[in-house]
Length: 385
Image 1 (cartoon, one colour):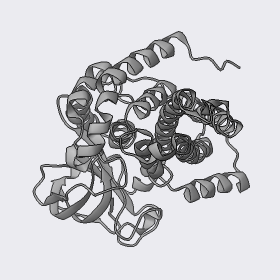
Image 2 (cartoon, one colour):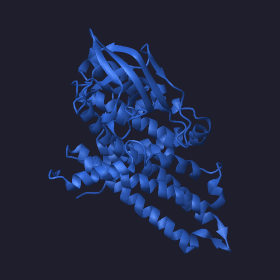
Image 3 (spheres, one colour):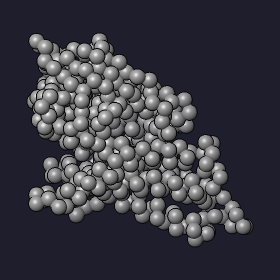
Image 4 (cartoon, one colour):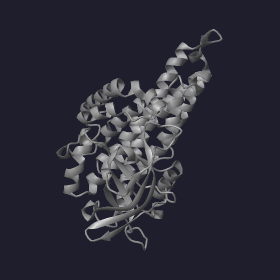
């Protein structure tokens, strides 16, 4: 059993870290204050492979292994939560279904564009006003009319919608319901009838646009169907497994950044004639943080390793997301506590990291859903290898 990253992964980690330290982290505060997406940095990510982590090289992507993908997303999380979420959603949600299930024609048309940094990003629309965790409550419908799909409905909380080339949209194609009633269709964002609302005003992650999307008699070719009709639920659940690894990785990055700031501050800040790092209460918070970050990283990397090896990883991805995201919120919260009143000020980065970390326990499946997934696997007669 080897817990070390291989040489290629270490070189990749350093390359990504150096890039985000130079291009992303210095803009993190501005991104949060203005809510503007950091396009200048993202444009440069194509050449490094960060916009095509899951995309094979033949379609212009990096095609890295799942552990390397998690490493990259963690480094982005360390630099800027907003940018990390947008890039994670692009890779994990906006391109994965197309890579795994899309036709060769769709792959050739869209993947090189979104992987290059010259175009916009990819997005996935699942949640609706009346359907979130319960995907079978989806009401957005698609009906066949000649050689086209006609789509009507509304989606909510769509990450990247306003900065996307296309939106992979989960729709109901069989009004009778059931697990085979949902399908996924690629909808270019310049399609007539598609309306993207203004960015939601959020507690954190302000530089990662989240939008409502309305479909009013939106027409796209039948060929824009992703995979088989009726396979949308399976495609979505498979996609979310990988996405949960990414959300866990972002949380580790945020926690690592907050932890580093807290350690530095604890050494510099003096109270009662001594650095506050000499006080046991501070030491214990730092010790807990270091332990939990390491544990979360192992969970995330293990889930990613299982994905790379082709092993079942649904339970492991849920465990990784559950622990890493709750850990991330806790570590960022304690970093604020170590900073004291300064931690509550927008002049210091730890309050932003806490606000960004808070969403991670909700997006791509709440903590409660992760516990449900884990419990179902534990109680199932089918055990993964």
